[in-house]
Figure 1 (cartoon, helix red, strand yellow):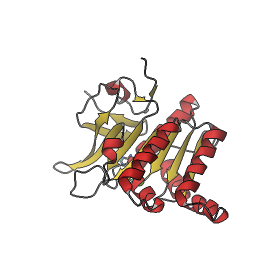
Figure 2 (figure 1 turned 90 degrees about the vertical axis):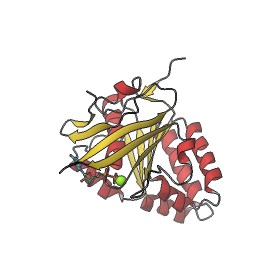
Figure 3 (figure 1 turned 45 degrees about the horizontal axis):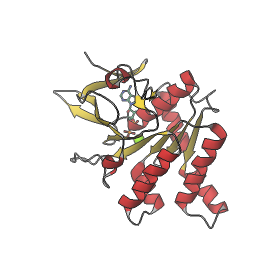
Figure 4 (figure 1 turned 45 degrees about the vertical axis):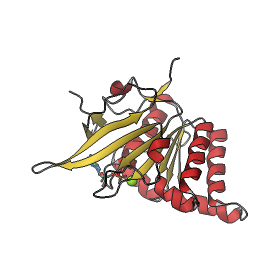
Length: 231
Ligand SMILES: Nc1ncnc2c1ncn2[C@@H]1O[C@H](COP(=O)(O)OP(=O)(O)O)[C@@H](O)[C@H]1O
Ligand SMILES: [Mg+2]
């Protein structure tokens, strides 16, 4: 059966995973602070909107909407003209709805927000920045069980989802509640120091339905955007 794939618009990357990410996957984007996870995920939404008219929502729970958009603008990804394709949702906007709908939990409001975007904008892509913050806001009582249901809910939404997870200094763990077992794919972004330079490395740790490279490849960002160096 043919698998439809989502392009990452990271030069060199789609080629080492059979053309892209299987549509409908739930992908972890894991890395320590400052490894460009937010920029990397926004890049996927931005170029899918710009070049394929695919709509997406960026849920920013760590950083306010304006701060995120200022950062992305600085990287050459301007939202201007793409308001129909990209929606950016932050904690403040969810809180406002929560105040109006007093009998609903945070998670119910969050899901309702996304469902409405699916209905009104027909979103194909969802980024959640970050999953650990979502877990805190949703106050999961039994995280593993509730995460399992959340991943299933995302799959039922018929979107390709990118969940950003924050790795701790000195730890090799991609996440804290076995999200890596539930995910269909894992991207790892890693800053490594050599003699006098710090470089960003990228690996496809896991990608279901896909033959892929597992090598750590240099990830660079310049005026032409992101690129993994494969030669
Ligand atoms: N061209 C570039 N190359 C490398 N890093 C950059 C470049 N432009 C900006 N940065 C920096 O990358 C850092 C991390 O970006 P961000 O996506 O917020 O990381 P994360 O979400 O992983 O914490 C920011 O401090 C940003 O200023
Ligand atoms: Mg970030």
